[in-house]
Length: 304
Image (cartoon, rainbow, N blue to C red; front, side):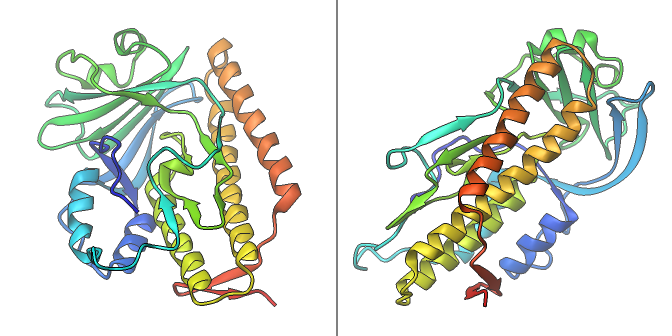
């Protein structure tokens, strides 16, 4: 597996469950001890007025997280024989199709906060033709994600998030914010993993936690295959089924959010894409949703 070539995400918000998973897998119980914490989320979604809810998460850049974990991953030995299996974490995949369920594009902005803005909160706001999501960064600043249109246009509609920002800032990177999944996800000798396998909507997804779980499963599948399993196709079928089930679960979360967002053409269009994704998953899972194995620690055991 080659290192990922995609740009690093400037800020990840990790739930307590995802923190616990990463700390356990890499045996680093204090990994997030000094990370900035989010203690509440302020939401202006479907209610008539914004509401404040308790929350518990940490903020960390993808680069810093990768650097913290990389020394624990053994370096490959160039004298080792060529690997029998390939994990594709970067395109291109072997011949495959990427199924896309949406059109929404996100822009990321690093913005200064007013002195009165709560730096322990994340902020979520639904607008007529998109949404805004803001999480704290270092000092009196934050990372703002704008989805559905130009940042300037969306902020002009905002009653919750725009007043938290001390000065206008131009958008920087843009990237797709709709769910995507590849087909096929695996075949003899290779597996797709991470965003090459599938990608989540940043509003509704636990992308980092899902990527870790995918990696654990991919390693377990390859370990079983290299150990001489006489059911390699069954291992691959289990991998496909687990990833598709996870993607389906994510789309159900998306359906709940987008059906409760503001009404209007933009929301109706994006919800229609999500429903098409749910139909795709149901069809794919009907054809081959069978969990043939279960993880015991980091090993796959057949389900009897």
